[in-house]
Amino acid sequence: DAYVPRQQHEKNRRGPLRSKLQAKDVVLYTTKAKTMSSFGSGEYAYEDDNDYDEEEYIDSDGEMLHDDSDVTNVLLEEDMLELKQRHYFCGYDSNRIECAVWFGFPLSSLSKELLFACGLDTSKSVAVKIVFTDPPIYGSRCPTVKDKHIFIRQTKKRDFTNLGLSDCESFGLWWTLEQRLSEYLQLQWKEISGGQQHTMDKLREQEKLASFKHIKHLMEIHHVRRDLARLALVQSNNHLDCATDLLFDEKKKRDLLLVLSRSPHTTRSVEGPNLLLRVLQFIKKRIEDATRFCLVCDQPHPLQLLKPTVCTQDLCNFQFTNMGLGINIENEILKSPQACDLLISMTTGASFSGRHFEPFPTVEAHINDSNGLPQKVSFDRNKPREVGEVLQKCPSISKMIEMIGRKALREELEAIHPLLYKLLRWIMGTNRCHLHYLTDSRMRVDGVCTDHQFILRSTPPEKERAFKQLKQQHKGTFYAFHGSGLGNWHSILRLGLKNFSGTEKQSHGAVYGPGIYMAVDGATALFYAGYGHVGSGWQHSQFGASVKCIALCEIVTYGDLDPKNCNGKLHAPK
Image: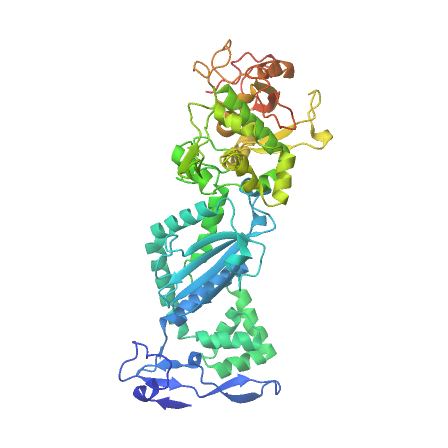
């Protein structure tokens, strides 16, 4: 070991001396580093080690000085260690320009219904990549989507050590999550960076008791946890040799472990906010709340349904359709072919009825006219039948599945009509309900003369829990049928059942006053389902063009009267 004056040592270093060193300071440069060899327990071998990372600095008062990059790296490692102990995934890559951190969580921790609605695969994980610039400070500058420093994807990998964008794929919520995360970080960055700075100050104080490099050395050589290596150094006054002796002595090592077991369990050496954990918690929450807000403008929906989608504003609908947000149409057709068939039939019926065609598809495409000049094509809200006429050209679901097998669905549909592919995306993406086709006859409702039955889930888990609480508060539930023309179901699946009594959209009379009318008798509901343009459905539907739809609804028994003799006043809201 030798003390080298600052001026002489500066010639041997790979970079300029740190600004913290004053003229009176000296540098302690270790030219012979003690490292453990395979000569046997307790023996040492001396090896030359001139690596830059082995440099340590001592000021005139004997205090060890540390570069902020050392403290920052430790803070990043502390944050990542806590993620791993919570069974999250993480990895990072850094250089002199930037630090790219990958971290995420398995999607299996979320409900299957929510994952299906959001187009996520339970066997995959959400992967978040954040790029931090202006090193060596971890998190010194707020990352934003605009700077291309935030990426959110899904991946099959569990090891994020060498993860790249080529190992990931996009999903329906990627754009929305990236935008919302960027906004959240910018809003909270002052607080986040202040908390990080406070934590790094604590780490600098802690460094005096246990050197970060010594901790890392003990972890690598003895294969021990960070907290055990830290405790050994603290009890050895930060002396590496003494800490090594402690860990070699099995009895003393057990004593150290006993001390750790009696101390309050914590995943971090110092208290402070974990930026990575905070981001993952935010992403999880936003996925769980995806049905509450518009995917584009982030305004709350007036009615919360199961699937994430956009609001009724034309601009949001346009961006949703033309930016590829929301669902993957190929996956929807493969996973739920009968549901896709029914949705196309309902939209076709709505376009020909013209009475309840809300929301209206706002899709457009750019083509060249006969003269080769660019031309924009879209649907005219004043001519709703145009939508149905385009859908009648759409091939059957079975033929579209063949197109997907050839990986040519979009190409072949746009060859039929330039708006057809985007229109189908819009139909399936704006439907916030989950339609599950019943193939098991034991699950079907008896007495209904059709094998084509679906379970319709239209509420997220939180609303379902509230419904169950109402069942307990009142007198349970009963079931009743609701029948409506095929063209009305396009709107019902997207906006819910509405009370149109006394409005221009009212289809029938209101004998019992305004409200949503039900029937305990399925035949009555089927009668009302026959109103409208029967036979105006999709001509290539597996259910036929003349489709009638009725719903069997579960209703909370609210009131004093017998539900079998419902007179219209029984379930009037307070």
